[in-house]
Image (tube, rainbow, N blue to C red):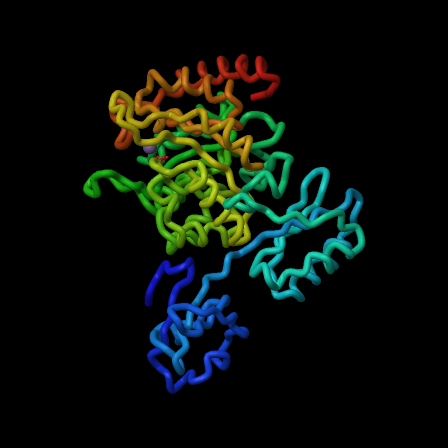
Length: 413
Ligand code: PEP
Ligand code: MN
């Protein structure tokens, strides 16, 4: 295997007996021929079947290459007033071309993304279909998360009960302890934050820790307590999922599945939450670029789940006065590049309780769609993240102050 030569992976064939004629390889379309190293090379543009991955060598004096296929997304923009039948007709055409489809219904327009090998796509066929306005190839790497797919902001439901985040909705605040410690403290906090106007209740049942011997959460018991708090307060439950194996179990209790900063690059987990119908709160990796952040979001959407809320929670920099550097400039940047809502976590973003209020106000002022704030009834005795947790009283005060900031920028909270 000679990786990286001329942007193709070289697959030379060891099992010559199975493929004396390269064109006859199973599952592979006719290759292009190219003169390389004084020999004829066969460039395959389809992934080789798994069983053939060991084929490395020459076939009858020919080099055999495998060129990875770039997935392309073309967005089919439907005309205003198109019906379900028009949409289904385009979906059928896309599928007939061997491509995948993803229908995105907006308030003004419906668009249909066609995803797959660009050579299988015949745009002209789709452009001729009734009520199709145009087909636009998406150039941004984070395709389905990009504004090229959908100009208007996406409103994401937090739960089935009507709470929403994004677009021109009320700014949504999620609050609660870092981790669920016991039933009493959780219910007390839940009632207090609901009273103050929060729309969601946060609380970790499975905790990622810097030191693996620290408190790792109550697990399933914590989930039961969160579900009880939802029943009593009506708040949407937001809790972290750390492994793909837990997704199904946690989704039975939670309204929103939180992907923590340490897992933003865990693509197996992203795919797993993308296969659920639960809203996903995707925290930015502590060293992730904007592009990597949006690529992770795109990966969730591509798995079938468009209900993604982004969360800026601070990044690692040389500064150690704060726990993380809260990079608020990503808020307008995300608004520029993506249709997804973004909220801000001023608790992990600073690590200090006294910074939570000023940074919350700054986040709202710069356009964040919401906040996620750690609130604990007794911060000095919190099992996790006490230093950055505010009391329910401080939270209620902050909510009053935030309303004024929201009004000042023409929003509601
Ligand atoms: C949390 O929300 O408690 C948490 C662990 O967040 P992060 O993944 O941003 O560190
Ligand atoms: Mn925490």
